[in-house]
Length: 260
Image (cartoon, rainbow, N blue to C red; front, side, top):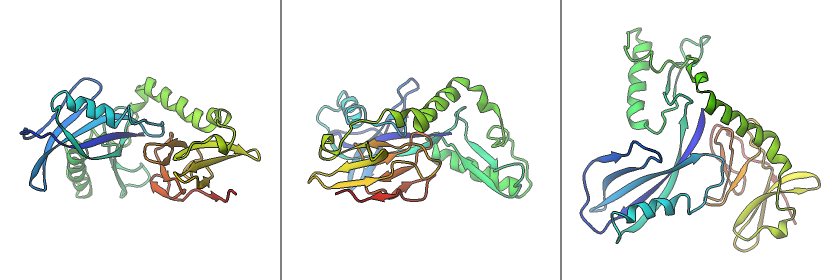
């Protein structure tokens, strides 16, 4: 699996809104739905997704969503914006069932592919039936021990290439070459005493330095200037600019360095 990041806007359209939820079928995918909030109906627009670990920009994410919404609601006001991550399987079908052939009483439900509210209910019913030794006619579709994802060779190859870059290639192509070249409120990985160091320089010029190696399996992290986080391109772990772990599968913080 891999992690995918999606972006969301909560919008006051300044006009009457529809009920329900709508999603398009072509790429790129966007979803529109309305929600009641503080005596007002807001539009929730989501999309602009990308594989977690690649540096996003405002133009490619929130602005893209806002520009889309303005086609239908030109007088809108964006009230809130945020992003979230989801587990994506290679064949786009969730894993639900036994964790492995050697652990018959341990179950897994993951890879919901951004359909968590629906698939979590499916998972609960399948796992419940497994525990009670009841037959579930849908369990074979989500078999967590299947090998079918290997058929998606193109995406598997892409993931392999991206992991190789995170482990090897990106460690060679490190820029800039000094802290002074990093702008305020920005971050980057540089070489100090032949060691890779992740640097974030805040608005006042204060330096936050960390070891930019993911504590999960050792991939080189990338700086996400949109959220001011260090993100892992291999498995989606994330850390804030101080090195504190904020998103799994990693659960340890990054090592911090003192930079004068």
